[in-house]
Image (cartoon, rainbow, N blue to C red):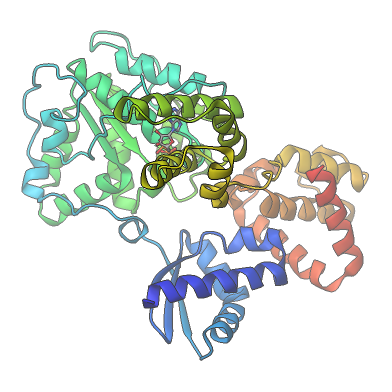
Length: 472
Ligand SMILES: Nc1ncnc2c1ncn2[C@@H]1O[C@H](COP(=O)(O)OP(=O)(O)OP(=O)(O)O)[C@@H](O)[C@H]1O
């Protein structure tokens, strides 16, 4: 077994122990996003996505992680925790040579079909991210959770250069695997086929392109080339890194919007929650149209599977999945589109490799690990404020106010603590939702209540009771 496989297995066991010792809430707040960057027998480097997480884990949990890891490994292990960079966070292709990336855009080619064999000259010249020919509007299945996002995306994709720009920027946000990239690529393909100069980039590619251009002193040409396009599409905005890159991105946004060009951006949360992003970029993004793609409901999951089956049958005419199995998968694989892809691919693979027909039993066996136990309820900050206020007999506006009497301060701190541990909201976002407070005030409240809950069984019971009410 390689060091990294061994480390993965150890981390799974360490994770189980931490979860048992600290509880599910603490575990998912602080440890879920940890990844193993480097693993050797006696030294491990872990990474987390934000500086805040690193400093919190360093201060509160690092010794415990070292102790559990060393116990599981059967020897002392040194552990270092780093903040993930864009370069380290995801595998990306090497940036194109900058002289090439910075060359101004070539004239627009004749309209092309979105068949993946030709990308527009702009896309190529600026080193745009590759387009997947399968990700089109035709293959994007519409459901309740994505109707608005799809409609806005289609409108943008089909508008002609002479049409007035309606929603600019169009910002689409959704959790992992809910179809953002699919929709963005469909926009890119459709607009390109309509003859517009389109550039589709992941935020990482934008960062690499700009940093490389700066190094090679070709930044001006890079900026000019960027501003020469009709439609700029940026995916995974949460990975836009660095102050200077963000400032350049902001200038590009402003220049393109002022020139009547369209911008489409996707991220994993609303602009107001992108805590690492420059305030100017956030407010510019929030000034257009922001739409969310919600979780895929069972009907939509079923329709996506149906579409996949039709596609698979076109390639393998003998392949079939009975409706009962489709319903079983749609009912049980609930997390996201990527898990649905995985489940469906396993049915095809098992069928083709073993010649077994696709039955419920076969599906149960092949997708067991993708089947989730009922998802936890999504708790809203407003509900936390309401229930905590009721419990302590104060009003919600007391909690949001600046009053500092003890009868209000403690419930407010408990509500902030619950907001941090029961929702995915960031500290700045929680601060804003609690009457425009600073994120350090929220952090103080979270630490305070975490400390008190450990020492005071009555308070701990009170907090648990509040959690139960919120989860009901
Ligand atoms: N409405 C839909 N119709 C058809 N396929 C979908 C739909 N929604 C998601 N999918 C499929 O689910 C998979 C994941 O979608 P996609 O990569 O677009 O997610 P994402 O939101 O960009 O995820 P991430 O946040 O990880 O970047 C893809 O194969 C995509 O085609």
